[in-house]
Length: 288
Image (cartoon, rainbow, N blue to C red; front, side, top):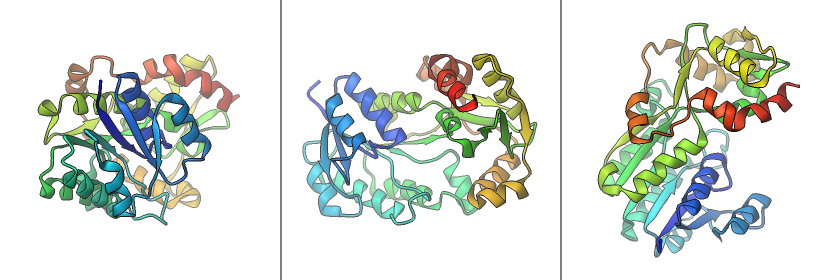
């Protein structure tokens, strides 16, 4: 395949998964990073990606590396990187894609971004979505749910031998594997005529915290109980996460249509399938 895709955020979770998938599919992959000498950037180069130095806050830098590109995967720094302007990054990528007449752009936003923006969360993601629509370029918006891989980080609840979360017992949390975000990106970039103008809420499963704990227990062979953490206790650890869990507890209906997503991508992973494939081995180390 003599086609080039520009991937932003390739040294992060989503961008890294997308770069790997596109390379496997035969795309030439160009990755934009502020530090091409970093270990993750060097690993991308060793995997076959073209690694270029650039900054999403610098329009000229983005435009320079957009030349000759057929497709773009755009994911931008969020609240965890307050030194970076998320909306400005999204605008610069979209403007450069338009000027370069890129065939198709895939933007990774967040599950229920429009709804969350009304609650004061993910406002920049929703603003970028609106800007893309106003700009009128060929684009697909992906709104991934919480990553299954987040459970590798103790802040998301798996620590001290238990699942400690502020999710209420009856709340179903939708989850998505990083490789499935990459799969939908590849679909949209390879078939822009089928995905142009679409917004897809992405999830591969929806489970209560008790079901998540039971699945982890079954996959690891360890007894991993669910321990409910009060929102007040979580606020002492992280106010932003507490706000997110408060909102999740208020959602009564699933956001992503998993059946429709599985028709589009039959390999869409359930949480148990993800555990069997990659998750359980790492979680054993964390929980040991």
